[in-house]
Length: 640
Image 1: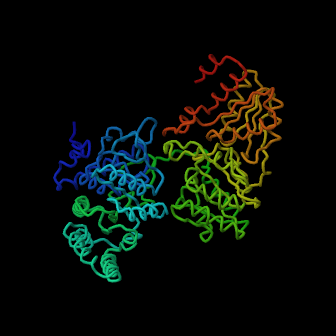
Image 2: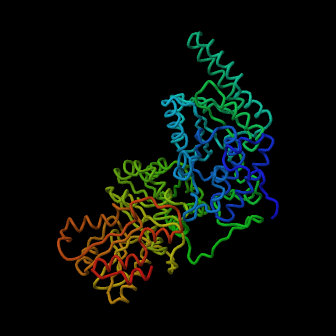
Image 3: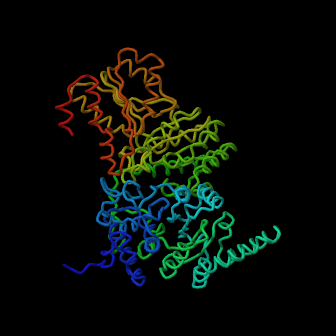
């Protein structure tokens, strides 16, 4: 057997093992950890660049602080793979984002070293402050450390938390992982020396004595002295903003230099003075892996790849992705109408709007990680006669719900919502699964809500959004590729609130909202083969509901099945409410709604997730047969 490529890392199963190493070996350990991260992600795919940027920081934090008693919170969590490797999960690291394997984010249920689950950005300081206050109330002494990126610091929630932390003055360590160089000047030896000096006990002690002396000065002199000291440090190190929020600022420091990181973290750990501290680390996303360093997005999210070349294994797509279809359709609408604008919250490539930006750079607005602002900003544009398309993932739009209700719907402003990642999302799991948008938008007065059944329908729905000026309108569509239908040259606006019948039958009716339509068609074939004549209809609109279509389906069939890629309280509930209200449930047709289960589903392949959810063709068949009282034991289980 050959010699191990990671001899030091092999000795580190948990951080306690790491803390037994001499400081001189930490650099080698970091290098081995970087190689293991690259190798693992080459097998599984996932987020790579962010993790490579925090390898040294991960090692330094676990070396200096007593995790898990000291709480370590990673903001978002897509940079946590190195953390997972050295916290007892190395033996499972090649199961990342796979069914039954490790989550791609931090997860409380997975490890005691993950004190707070994440996946959406800018929550770490709030959660950390909550833990710090809980610690103070319990009379404990452990540290709380939140690591947040400069991108995540573009969200208002981070500043709300810092403002509150400054006021409460609880001991909290925030590490700003700045990999954009957007804030920091070049980091050199002088900066490192000054950071080490101002984080030291002796400096903090002198500062404390100075403060005590200054307390006896008249208030104007006291305030002047305090500001002079803060601004003197701010001019040298750039931390005045954080000082104003009540944080003691240290930095900027080189986040890849363990000789700088370790002593500064030790100074902060041993500080007797308390209060919130912000350590500003400058790092390089993708650090130490040439293909990542050379890539524009630093290989932020990757499929499986070749470690030597960095070439990613891209499966051949049979159809364009819904995201791309949306973006190309929006470009066509924008060519016809100069009032069409695009708004996104730090996800230009994720929503496809990077394509729109190439075509219309002056009509695209990336507002950073600020979904609440994005929605109200779009409302302001709409109020002035423009046609803003607000492209936000389903689960990210949840963060702006009040703004959708208050600033858009109450004022009936024609903001267009393009809701990507609707339905289950595979390897990103529960945190990114768009299960709730039909329920949370469909209950709002003035909202028009569509779901695309395939990529051609999405083209027409983008055109419908562009043409509709009477109020807010939304279209939801899933992650991944379309189904391979013929694509229209141009989108044609749909009649609002009208569905379509794709297959006419007489006994069973399947009314689908969204991309379960293909499974509904398969189920109809199966049922027809059993001698059960089946109608398949595409609702197109969850709101307003096509009441004439629903009325016809109930009147002409023994069974009506509704199916959607959403939670309870959505489309099926709207249909049932209408039927009950109209007295159409009083006799005759049996109605069976099919929705996502009332649970947060773990990551897996999309097909397996829908299999687990009971929303594939065989489940539709079984639902129909059961409603008709036909024994399914033979047929349904044989097809499993």
